[in-house]
Length: 597
Image (cartoon, rainbow, N blue to C red; front, side, top):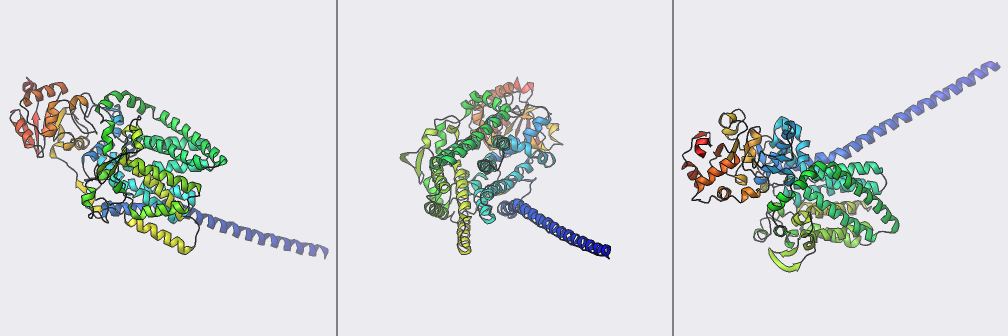
């Protein structure tokens, strides 16, 4: 009987254990489900903004247009040719064991030092698979569509890391990635509209400051991002370093002792990142220094950049790149310095009022006070060395006049500082929207920001897709018949007036040219009266001997002119009576020893 009772008790204990085991399994199962749901949610948070911003980019710049990634070019003008050629050059040079920093495919035989041009080496290498399979034009177009998406997404991650609030981060990302600055630069400056590194660098700095990232990880990742930014735009690299340290000084001025120590420690680590990035970039820097003397002779004087300063009215008056109100102020915006691409400072009254409200209400808080001062500093810097109002120069020298006399910064264009203005504004608004408040107030704040965004929506008619110029002569299967591989040519219209930079990638780089357009004309070419004749279609009494001498010096074997070549130059070329042949709409003139005798 006693044994039977013991057995029954044992069965009860086993039953309890089984029940507990089943309950434990259920708990574990629930935890796994919650983890999967949380992981899915985190994945959505990470990638959904990219999809949302991509929809905006496609709607703004592609959906309403007859576009093709491979057979049309986004906003074709002089500058996109530089970038299309560069997307092709870097992988081509590496694949053919050429020095990628120096090219003789342009301005032959002296060539050109590409470290002194906006040749976007990092982007060209990152997009090399796209270029290989679909061509350099596809790489350029895809980058244009993705640039605002990447910039907006990086800003989203910056604000989300700080606030952990999705809607505020989403709106902040949009304000930065789809700013007036971005819309302006999308008209042709790839090196300036690809800005995703900047918010990511700030995000890393904050994570290190909060001690949520290990020191060596921060230094390594920051160094890599700095190197990437340098490989996209040396101008933005230099201005980011400058404005970063100014921002740090502002924060240090208002911080308590403990905060200052943390900021200084993080800044020191950032300094190590900067040094490491320069080590990574040492091959590029070597050729950059090597070409300094030549480049400084070719570059405009610093005072020339004063022209590209932000007019005070540009902050409050919409330009043609903005949908609402762009046609109301045409007479005023026509007086602004620079061109449409360099008039991207438009904030609108709504954003200015939002900034003032946030700054005044939160003036005692360290973060808002520091960001507000930095914002005002950047606005003043964007106005350049001298105050401009309504296109007129006022007798008031601004602080940036000092920077005009400093190395590197003397070549920075003040108009472009509006990118940092929007970056700080996005951060301020993102933080403000994430402040705990009632549901009603929260919705009102979201609505106010959305209304402000509506006022800076782009005028999509400014963006177009032009069919790719593909003359019959430069087709890969035909070009070698008329231009033997390795030949050096002159192509008219010359330089930035024509499409010669597109013809080389399209014909698989079969020939070099004593010309091109890579941002500036080498001084030995610029001083040649023949080149001035090519650019200005000016009549020269000694055109023939100048042309003969030019062809001898630069080993030119073919001269090609297209239908859009000036009639003056065509007449001069025809009067030479040199052997020529028409291929489609192109005319190829043969330069032989007989012609040069």
